[in-house]
Length: 262
Image (tube, rainbow, N blue to C red; front, side, top):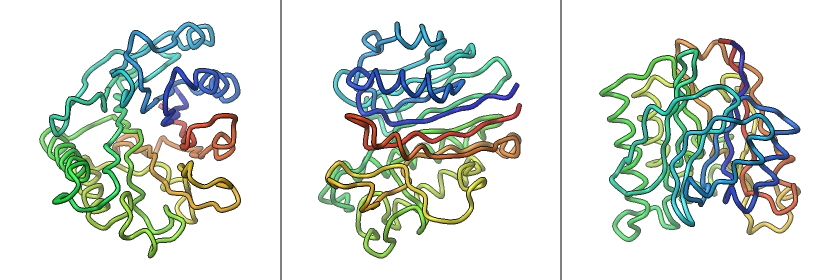
């Protein structure tokens, strides 16, 4: 059963309901994973999404911040929602498709502005969250699974606009990259996007602070699609829809896509 999956930090699903609907209409992914929904689950605007064929949802929400949801044309059953680092945040939801594939949707903490946990609690929370993700994958090695989301780390040198300038900037510091690598290794996850696009600069986020983000192109690849080795070879067609960042009142993230022939 081939299916196309997309992941997108929407930065308020209610504010950008129209953009979600536009993506659904224009790109028609079978499964759309959203992060930073900023909405209680019962306030997510489902009517328009259901009218477009997305009749299934698993989600965790909060008023005003965080929040993750998986909207699907295909039947999907909730199979978990972890609270790593005991933050009490809606940052993870997992659902299982009828073909047995489990989809994990994550919104990893951004980590604040200073990459030092002694003066910035948010940075410590980010590292702790990743550590607990790592330990969970060590304890229960995933199989036939896909992990997507805003992981808030750009791991490779070509995942940022300037590697040297960003080494001390949260999202690309060596300690964050190492924590993410340990998490990836613990689950034996394959970076599907870089499997398909192995070389070259690749970004999924551009700051709102840049008035001419497209020309400046100071981006980072913060949004990821991973898969376990038993299904990673079935993945293809990876792409980042850069143009979506230029839509009216956009999120600062662009959607990331992959197709799986399973």
